[in-house]
Length: 166
Ligand code: ADP
Image (cartoon, rainbow, N blue to C red; front, side, top):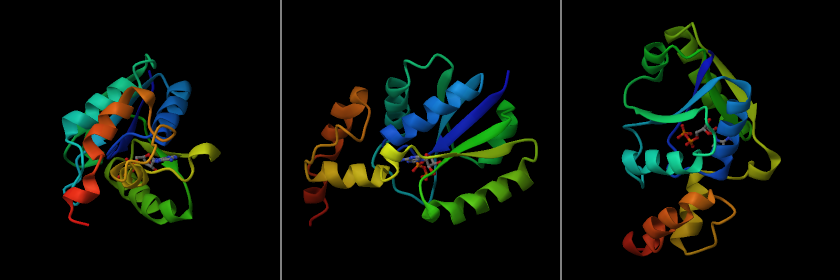
């Protein structure tokens, strides 16, 4: 049973994330999408909310489960015995950071490979940050996030720019 992980902030989950998770689920026996708690970021959604939205968005994929982790990713890889870390690559701008992370994780957890899946052309522009910007101004985000979480995301982010005093 080849187990892999799809780590990320998922703040919030987008159709781009679900595309990568779906494609990983077609390649491997078991996929765990992991909400990684990054102390350097101040997220808009709590870990519990991000887990809940990921669960709703992947409920149709029987070999996908959701978890969270607040330490080093390499520690999690070892703990669950993952054979690979699956990442999505959107553009050259993703590459330098992802390349550095892949080499670091290989050093810390040599038993796992980092595998990059090229973004689908439909989602190459899409990021959680973009969703947050559009939703804050009450723009239509229905093409960006899974239908199962559209209401959750809109409710939380609507009018966010006002709260920030812009
Ligand atoms: P992080 O904060 O670690 O960048 P994200 O939640 O933004 O986490 O992304 C998690 C993973 O999903 C990363 O591997 C990222 O490259 C990938 N990803 C995000 N958006 C897209 C997209 N539109 N197409 C392909 N991969 C994506």
